[in-house]
Image 1 (cartoon, helix red, strand yellow):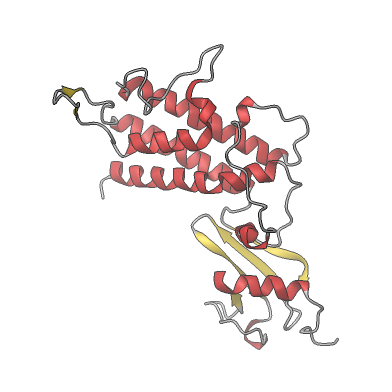
Image 2 (image 1 turned 180 degrees about the vertical axis):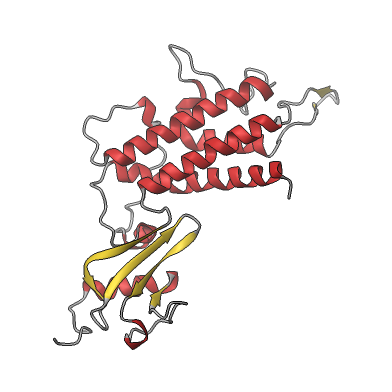
Length: 255
């Protein structure tokens, strides 16, 4: 695959990851830093009904934060917004040809008006993705049959690579703030409910979380072995492990 097309696909994937995780990041800003356990990806299953991440909020750069509980998450959110807003400004300056009243237009900020930044990171991410996909780059037919110029020009290759750079940087910053980048971390203050072995949480930006037990094949947990001979709880098994760890330690053999 040509380098430009690889960059396009990677940039789009990164933008979608950021949008998917944005609600969790906003929630993290207003919550104390999480422990390693349970995995953040299980939050939607473990959170009480109706307690969903809030994403339809004023952009972080436009609101006050008198006492954020997680400064790392706040810094990551501010970085993500500023980078994507500035990228949108850069792309719009080169490829945008829309009329002022066109809903597809990216509007610049002014000293008295935040422009399209008021719509938040989701809108910026969707707008940039549209430019990466070269959407709306053909002349358009009006109701009277006449053709008007395309709302946008195709994205030049140098701006495609700039969008790729920014999108990947933002994705990495958001995933690190949420503890979803590639890492293996001991699960603190908890042992395997079946054998009392040490547990380790494995996360990555492109994979579901998993947990392994240090005991190996002698562990009696009802889950398969991984390539290293450790019992492993994959995505479908993790809810059961979380439940087992909050029960009375009846599964743990007596010392």
